[in-house]
Image (cartoon, rainbow, N blue to C red):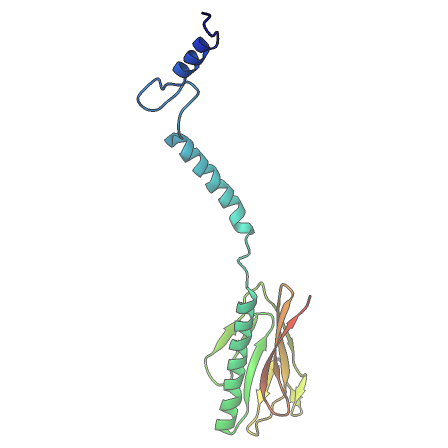
Length: 176
Protein backbone atom coordinates (compact mmCIF):
# COMPACT_ATOMS: atom_id res chain seq x y z
CA UNK A 1 0.00 0.00 0.00
CA UNK A 2 1.07 3.48 -0.77
CA UNK A 3 1.15 6.13 1.92
CA UNK A 4 -0.44 9.50 1.35
CA UNK A 5 2.24 12.18 0.66
CA UNK A 6 0.14 14.96 2.34
CA UNK A 7 -0.07 13.42 5.79
CA UNK A 8 3.44 14.41 6.96
CA UNK A 9 2.87 18.06 5.85
CA UNK A 10 -0.35 18.33 7.83
CA UNK A 11 1.39 17.10 10.95
CA UNK A 12 4.15 19.69 10.56
CA UNK A 13 1.60 22.53 10.21
CA UNK A 14 -0.17 21.43 13.37
CA UNK A 15 3.11 21.38 15.28
CA UNK A 16 4.01 24.90 14.12
CA UNK A 17 0.84 26.42 15.58
CA UNK A 18 1.48 25.31 19.12
CA UNK A 19 2.49 28.07 21.55
CA UNK A 20 6.16 28.31 22.38
CA UNK A 21 5.74 29.60 25.93
CA UNK A 22 3.02 29.41 28.54
CA UNK A 23 2.23 33.14 28.12
CA UNK A 24 0.31 32.56 24.91
CA UNK A 25 2.88 33.98 22.53
CA UNK A 26 3.22 32.40 19.14
CA UNK A 27 5.93 32.60 16.57
CA UNK A 28 3.91 35.24 14.65
CA UNK A 29 3.92 37.93 17.41
CA UNK A 30 2.39 38.96 20.72
CA UNK A 31 -1.21 38.70 21.83
CA UNK A 32 -1.83 42.29 23.05
CA UNK A 33 -0.39 45.77 23.58
CA UNK A 34 2.41 46.68 25.94
CA UNK A 35 2.11 49.43 28.51
CA UNK A 36 4.58 51.56 26.57
CA UNK A 37 2.44 51.33 23.41
CA UNK A 38 -0.67 52.35 25.34
CA UNK A 39 1.10 55.33 26.93
CA UNK A 40 2.37 56.48 23.52
CA UNK A 41 -1.12 56.33 22.01
CA UNK A 42 -2.59 58.28 24.93
CA UNK A 43 0.17 60.91 24.63
CA UNK A 44 -0.57 61.37 20.92
CA UNK A 45 -4.31 61.70 21.58
CA UNK A 46 -3.61 64.25 24.34
CA UNK A 47 -1.42 66.34 22.01
CA UNK A 48 -4.08 66.32 19.30
CA UNK A 49 -6.71 67.37 21.83
CA UNK A 50 -4.49 70.19 23.10
CA UNK A 51 -4.10 71.52 19.56
CA UNK A 52 -7.79 71.15 18.65
CA UNK A 53 -9.31 72.44 21.93
CA UNK A 54 -8.93 76.19 21.21
CA UNK A 55 -10.72 75.73 17.90
CA UNK A 56 -13.96 74.67 19.60
CA UNK A 57 -16.34 77.58 20.06
CA UNK A 58 -16.29 78.89 23.59
CA UNK A 59 -18.04 82.12 22.73
CA UNK A 60 -21.51 83.29 23.53
CA UNK A 61 -24.22 80.89 22.40
CA UNK A 62 -27.67 81.92 21.18
CA UNK A 63 -29.39 81.03 24.49
CA UNK A 64 -26.79 83.08 26.37
CA UNK A 65 -27.32 85.98 23.95
CA UNK A 66 -31.04 85.84 24.73
CA UNK A 67 -30.23 85.72 28.45
CA UNK A 68 -28.25 88.97 28.15
CA UNK A 69 -31.23 90.56 26.41
CA UNK A 70 -33.53 89.38 29.21
CA UNK A 71 -31.16 90.88 31.81
CA UNK A 72 -31.14 94.23 29.97
CA UNK A 73 -34.94 94.18 29.65
CA UNK A 74 -35.35 93.38 33.35
CA UNK A 75 -33.07 96.29 34.26
CA UNK A 76 -35.05 98.68 32.04
CA UNK A 77 -38.39 97.44 33.43
CA UNK A 78 -37.10 98.00 36.96
CA UNK A 79 -36.19 101.59 36.01
CA UNK A 80 -39.65 102.17 34.53
CA UNK A 81 -41.26 100.83 37.69
CA UNK A 82 -39.01 103.06 39.82
CA UNK A 83 -40.07 106.12 37.78
CA UNK A 84 -43.73 105.29 38.38
CA UNK A 85 -43.23 104.71 42.11
CA UNK A 86 -41.01 107.77 42.69
CA UNK A 87 -43.14 110.09 40.53
CA UNK A 88 -39.96 111.28 38.82
CA UNK A 89 -37.67 110.62 35.89
CA UNK A 90 -35.22 107.71 35.94
CA UNK A 91 -32.42 107.49 33.38
CA UNK A 92 -30.80 104.20 32.40
CA UNK A 93 -27.32 104.81 30.96
CA UNK A 94 -26.40 102.85 27.82
CA UNK A 95 -22.68 102.84 27.02
CA UNK A 96 -21.98 101.03 23.74
CA UNK A 97 -18.21 101.47 24.03
CA UNK A 98 -17.91 99.77 27.40
CA UNK A 99 -20.78 97.43 26.46
CA UNK A 100 -22.81 98.17 29.58
CA UNK A 101 -26.31 99.16 30.57
CA UNK A 102 -26.43 100.85 33.99
CA UNK A 103 -29.62 101.26 35.99
CA UNK A 104 -30.74 104.74 37.02
CA UNK A 105 -32.67 103.46 40.01
CA UNK A 106 -30.17 101.11 41.63
CA UNK A 107 -26.70 99.58 41.52
CA UNK A 108 -27.50 97.14 38.70
CA UNK A 109 -25.24 96.89 35.67
CA UNK A 110 -25.39 94.46 32.75
CA UNK A 111 -22.01 93.85 31.08
CA UNK A 112 -22.12 92.26 27.62
CA UNK A 113 -19.07 90.17 26.52
CA UNK A 114 -16.76 91.33 23.74
CA UNK A 115 -17.75 88.61 21.25
CA UNK A 116 -21.27 90.09 21.08
CA UNK A 117 -21.92 93.10 18.84
CA UNK A 118 -23.60 95.77 20.97
CA UNK A 119 -25.57 98.48 19.13
CA UNK A 120 -27.80 101.14 20.64
CA UNK A 121 -30.27 103.30 18.75
CA UNK A 122 -31.18 106.09 21.14
CA UNK A 123 -32.89 109.47 20.66
CA UNK A 124 -30.70 112.56 20.46
CA UNK A 125 -33.21 114.69 22.33
CA UNK A 126 -35.77 113.85 24.97
CA UNK A 127 -38.27 116.31 26.49
CA UNK A 128 -36.44 119.19 24.80
CA UNK A 129 -33.05 118.23 26.27
CA UNK A 130 -30.07 116.31 24.92
CA UNK A 131 -30.59 112.65 25.76
CA UNK A 132 -26.91 111.73 25.43
CA UNK A 133 -26.71 107.97 25.95
CA UNK A 134 -29.71 107.38 28.18
CA UNK A 135 -33.12 105.82 28.06
CA UNK A 136 -35.35 107.99 30.22
CA UNK A 137 -38.53 106.85 31.96
CA UNK A 138 -41.05 109.35 33.35
CA UNK A 139 -43.66 109.34 36.13
CA UNK A 140 -46.45 109.23 33.54
CA UNK A 141 -45.22 105.82 32.33
CA UNK A 142 -43.83 107.19 29.06
CA UNK A 143 -40.21 107.20 28.00
CA UNK A 144 -37.92 108.59 25.32
CA UNK A 145 -37.67 105.14 23.78
CA UNK A 146 -34.70 103.38 22.27
CA UNK A 147 -33.44 100.06 20.98
CA UNK A 148 -30.50 97.96 22.13
CA UNK A 149 -29.40 95.26 19.71
CA UNK A 150 -27.18 92.31 20.62
CA UNK A 151 -25.80 90.29 17.69
CA UNK A 152 -23.70 87.12 17.54
CA UNK A 153 -23.15 84.57 14.70
CA UNK A 154 -26.21 85.34 12.61
CA UNK A 155 -28.55 85.76 15.58
CA UNK A 156 -29.78 89.10 16.89
CA UNK A 157 -31.90 90.02 19.87
CA UNK A 158 -33.35 93.49 20.23
CA UNK A 159 -34.56 95.11 23.44
CA UNK A 160 -37.06 97.79 22.41
CA UNK A 161 -38.42 100.53 24.65
CA UNK A 162 -41.66 102.07 23.41
CA UNK A 163 -41.63 105.85 23.79
CA UNK A 164 -45.40 106.18 24.25
CA UNK A 165 -46.08 103.41 26.77
CA UNK A 166 -42.61 102.91 28.23
CA UNK A 167 -43.07 99.18 27.66
CA UNK A 168 -40.00 96.99 27.15
CA UNK A 169 -40.12 94.21 24.56
CA UNK A 170 -37.61 91.58 23.42
CA UNK A 171 -37.55 90.65 19.73
CA UNK A 172 -35.34 87.79 18.46
CA UNK A 173 -34.20 87.76 14.83
CA UNK A 174 -32.27 85.41 12.56
CA UNK A 175 -29.94 87.31 10.27
CA UNK A 176 -29.15 84.41 7.94
